[in-house]
Amino acid sequence: MASFSASEFNRRLRQAQQDLNRQLRAAQQQAEREMKRQLAAANREIMAENRKVEAHNRKVINDHNRAVDQHNRRADAHNKRVLDEINRRLVAASQPQVQVRYTPAEQELVDRVHAALPVGNREHDLFCSYARIDGEAVTDELHSGLTSLGLDVWRDKAEMKPGKSMARQLDNGLRLARAGIVVLTPAYLAGRFWTERELGALLHKDTVIPVLHNVTFADVKEYSSFLGDMVGFDTAEDSIEEIAAKIASALIDPAA
Image (cartoon, rainbow, N blue to C red):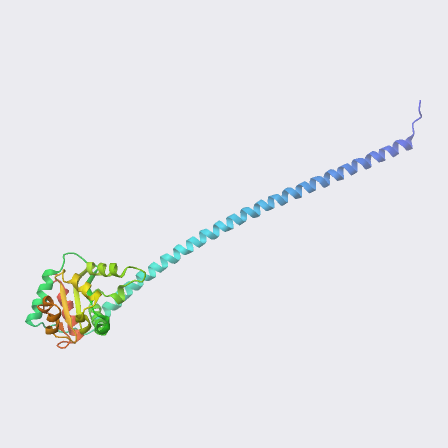
């Protein structure tokens, strides 16, 4: 029987402990590497999710800001219209009122306009037809006088929108106006495509108010026998302020 060697036993024991320690360190290192790998993967997923959430939040905030901006622009535009209307009324109220006195012929025109005014509200009180070449300045003054008295006057310079059909916009203005006003000047009587087109439509309204400027009724009659038989206002007889006051009075419903 072999004899027991304590030193050999201790040597083998130490060797076994060392092997076990190496295995434990290797397992621990492997576990640490796996943990780091899993943590890195989790961090990548979290960062990716955070980026998605941030992108979504930015979109929601941007959409909200755009909606707020649009609402504010609409509110600003509405408030401006309200303020402009209030200011216009204040200016009209502060201006001295022109005493309106009609000649018998003018009174006949006013009565005809009253009788022909359409029932119900229209978007505009007047459609203004004129020739720019020599009628723009007097039309500007007349437009200012009429609007200061509370009338809504359609005219191309104020109402035309770029990028849209000119003919269609003119047709809409003609259709939505209660009455028509024609500023008759030498250039208008010379005959121009747009003015002839507008006048043709206005003559079907039976509510045409001629305003003569630097022409006579004899000139007008040569241009149109129908217009020549109509009564109108003449800047040679009345100031623009007086003519605006007469037209405004003509468009007021006497029963209102």
